[in-house]
Length: 360
Image (cartoon, rainbow, N blue to C red; front, side):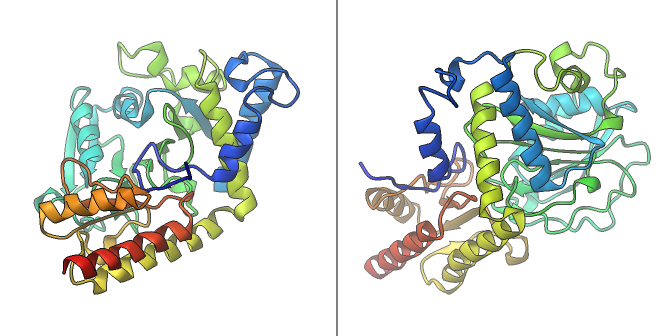
């Protein structure tokens, strides 16, 4: 069977070059006579893999020396608890709720202290990003939390909130490595890798060193303390070795492609093709306020549930798969991450035009 264009929100499309390389090395990695899947995380060969992966990520994002890179398990969702456990010294944190994942993080933080919702776009089904230029940031807040790109709703912070000098913590799961970022603007920037980087099962946390302390909330498990993993170079226990290996391959692929400036250019180009069509279509409509549109996740609807279902089914038959919207919003969603080629977006738009003609 030939490859499909996979528009899944995550686990998601990976670069074909990387998949081929990984397949070639499946039985014998670099002359070791074994797969990375079988390799001890204490071996010299694996140490080289994790060291290279970290260095390539540092190069791609220009991560300063006073930030640690941690390869952790539990996905982004585990960070919803780990962040307050490690950072809530005053037992107060401010949350900007722009989608389901920010909402879940906000709810989880309430278990550990006072979580304040200082802005939200829930009133319009999370279809926009609220104005965050002058928020009522709590004077004693330990941090301000955002989810930068909202996978389900297709919105993106184009400007970071004014945190009034407070620490910014950001979940970048679905826009990770899609464009350049200034890491110094964040205390913690983290993301699950299964959307834009690698296979499922890991989260990468980039954390400023002064935030890594033994002074955590009482009862915080050893495994949920950043210091445990920072001190051990992400090898305190057996990490997700194979995922780290594949992510490392993706970092090398991104470098070869020209880095994050080039990815941003490509991503803007791909998104423009799809948004331009949505803006002129008589049948399909985008659901997000134009200025807050994500480059990564593009939700759209026909306004008719039966027609939406028909579209998803016929698209799948045409090799355009995983276009069904999240169950909480319905409609359709095209996730067009770094590894989605421009041809995939062009094929989608051509199919949408044909569908519109046939169903007008």
